[in-house]
Length: 240
Image 1 (tube, rainbow, N blue to C red):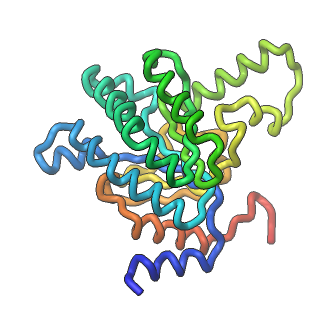
Image 2 (image 1 turned 180 degrees about the horizontal axis):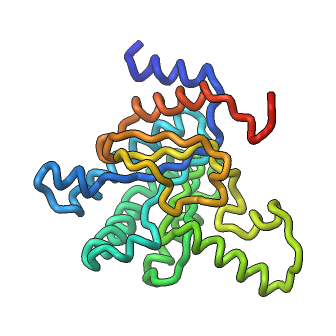
C-alpha cells in the first residue's frame, strides 16, 4: 500500500475522534514567503480545506469545524476582510454541489451581524441543500468569536428570565447546540493559543499544534495529529 493508504489503515485501528476543530492559521505568512499578496495565501488555503474535508470523510469523522473568519478579523485592512468573505462566498457556491454529492452536511456558526444579506442567503441555501445528508458535518465558523458567542448566549438566557441554569442547559443556547464538543483542536502556523475559538466547547479538548502554515497542511500531517490524539489518556478530571 502507498504511504497515505497505510496511514489511513493505521488511524482506523484506533479511536477516531468524533469532532475535530481546526484553527487554519498562516495563509498570510505563506503568501509573504513567496512574495504574493495575502489574498493569494487565502486562496491557497482553500485547497488545504478540500484535502482535509475529504480525508475527514474517508476516516469516518462525524464533525469537522473550521475557523474561517473571526470577529477579530474585521480589524484587518478593509480590503482584505472583504476579499476573504468574498472568497468564502464564491468558494462555497463552487463547492456546494460537490459537497452535497459526497454526503457532507454544511453548517455555519457565528454572528450574522455585519454580514451581507446575500451572503446570509447563500449560507442558508447551502445548509438546506445538504441538510438531509448523513456523512461528515462540516461546520464553518464565520464572523465567529468565542466571547461574543457566550455574551449572546447569556443575553438570550436573560431574555427568557431564567434565574438558574446548568452547564448542559447553557450549552443548548450556544451556536453549537446541535454538535458534540470537539475532541481535538488543531492549530497550524506555530502559534500556541486558541484565539477566541470555541472557548466554552474546548474546555476538555486535546490540543495539537504544528509549525506548518495552513496552505501546506496536508492529509498525512492531519492523520499524524489524529495518531497522536489516539495515544493520549483522556480522563476529564477523573482517574481511570
